[in-house]
Image 1 (tube, rainbow, N blue to C red):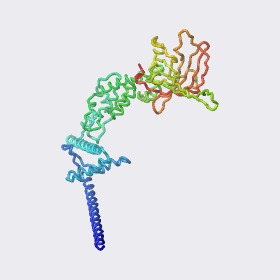
Image 2: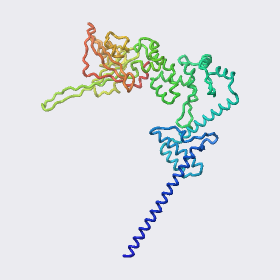
Image 3: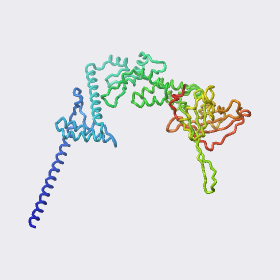
Image 4: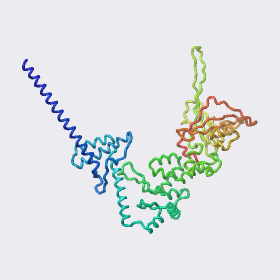
Length: 478
């Protein structure tokens, strides 16, 4: 029994000794890390990190406080840059284990911290070199009266002298007298006169990858964009504009949008000339195309309508109701023709109906099989609110609307005499998901051909038309 107590006391003493030893070692490590981190922070502020990937470049000192300050999630980038800077200094000093630990912490916070660090370093390097060249040029050739005269003569050139500004009159005089590049008639020279695009470049996501698009002259790039606009809509051009700042600048060329506006806004879209309304949009053809109401010709307007009908049941305790679904289709053509189709078969999907909405199926071209319930009429866009109306003053305050007249069923036999035609008034609206993509039914009536008597039709179950783009239609302008 005594041996057991002695063994128990030995074990307890041994545990206490091990615990005390571990506690002392941890405290010593914490003090060592705190002192080492303070030394690293002080060194990071006063030292210059050397980029091994750019041994021949002259790198300026980058203290930690020179990094940009980020808010919220951006603080992770700032902390990652600090860890990355400290890791570079430790690696130069030979402390590879500590450097590796900081590298891991930096990349854990931001996987692109190396790109951010090298970008900031190169920006300061390039800025320092430009300032050095400017200082040397000023020291070798101090400004004089003759040099100031030269500056006024070449006001469009960038001069590394920030003490004097180039005269705006001299700059405008030089641009007016300078020879203009040989450009097509539809390309405006304002884009090249202001010369903002010559200072912009397409940049790759990774700095080491080449950007072959920069080798393409801007004039040729404009011709490519013009070809895109002729075969597609403006959405393709705007998608390209989101690539970079240069893409956004070059897609604002007025010549591109002027040609698109002139091809789009013709009767029956717009009765007067587009130039007469251009001042309302700051003489900007792009804003004109975005905000001026127009009927979409590159797709079909579809209305999905529902109503409930009571069914018949032999059992008095059972009530049967039917949910009836039918579709209305409207396709507008650039020559003022509109095709209207009513599909009461819920099993037929729009994908099956849309290919049938052609003039051939309507019998207008004299070929093809006539499609039942396919009507043909004439349409015109009215801009309302101070614009022209078609005889109904109440529609002037409703905003832009479409008038459809002479709508008749072309599927009837030639031996049957038409007695009625139909007339519609549709309000043209824009919703957040697109531009001019909704048609509200304002008025629907039937007109007796012999007596011209107009009878309004009830709109109990009708729903608005929503636009659906059809790729096979292209821009719809042809």
